[in-house]
Image (cartoon, rainbow, N blue to C red):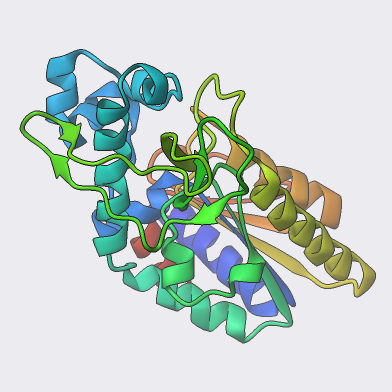
Length: 274
């Protein structure tokens, strides 16, 4: 406990003195809002017991082939998630982070989450890089129609049969649409929107470097199974002489040369720091 307190105090001091903040967030960021993090098959099946009966894992379901072979099943999964994320209220940790970044000279967000919770919480849309895309944007499974907003799309799902009652269609060619989310074995994902976001992250980093800003990197809920977010945190720390505050109840370990680990959940960790 004493070591944990020391880590928290060290992190608080660095965040207080930072000029710029890079928030890096994985699935654990949404847990305190009531969202599932799909941690392993058991965690996924707890969120979707009907899929367990079908014998599919998260990796099975997060595959674009379903939009060809069984679009009603594909849209049952993604339609339910779209409805869930729309209904979810971001937890208080988002407000805490928003107040923090508003007090600094610059900030940016790197997230693997596709739920749009940072936008809903009021963060600047031009300061968010969703590296796996967004469920709130669709693309066609067939034609080259550009990525478009899903704000006017509704998907009804029969949760007993676990099938979509309607299928979103491309407004250009009327073929089946899909979420603009990077899935497993996904060679058809349109990455143009995320590429624009990535370029903005590069601009943020250039601004930090050119102004010699002291950078604090606050990482929340990023696990080791798919370590994209953790790599971004660590690479940015090395690249920009930053300091990582890794908040994770399980996978909190980090090289003490670049940061500290806080063994708490997202909201509790942010409350303890800020």
